[in-house]
Image (tube, rainbow, N blue to C red):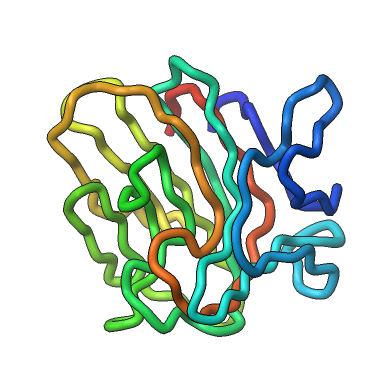
Amino acid sequence: MPTPNFGTGFEHQIIATGAVATGGTQIWNGASGTISVDTTTFRTGSASLRVNPTAALGYLRRTVVAGNRHLVGVIHYHFTSLPTGDNSEVVTFGADAQVGIGVRASDGKWYASNGTTQVSALGPSTAGWYRIDFHFDTSTNPHTIYWKINGVTQTQVDRATAAADIANYSLGAVVTPTTVDFNIDDVAISYATGD
């Protein structure tokens, strides 16, 4: 992964919007729904973000600095219960909430959506942590999501649309109200190209 622009293991235990980090940058620019700091279930350290909405949304959002057309990252997920609905993105990119990676209730599989949907052969269970690596590239037409689950490369997803900046990204149950319970930990994000 290239040099990170942002990283968190939620050890700071800050999920309030407007809280400012050292250097004066807001940590989170938006939040919604049922989210909390969890000091019981975590991958490393002593905390994680718990997302557990009931027929609702629950997420944190961070604004991307203008001019960035690459979002490269790694995020770790642990599910206590899987989502009850399809379109259950767990990370979204940009202003279009339908662009992201999530889990479908209909078949229990991971998927990436970017105007079209690519379904993985893999699906999460309620045991263990899952590592999602991604590179969202909006620098050319088409926009592309490259992604991996636990190191296994998944089929990329393309969307024919003009090059554009990435406005933000969100972590959590973002698109369609759902009932789900999962934790997010060890997040690293970069605005540079990378593998």
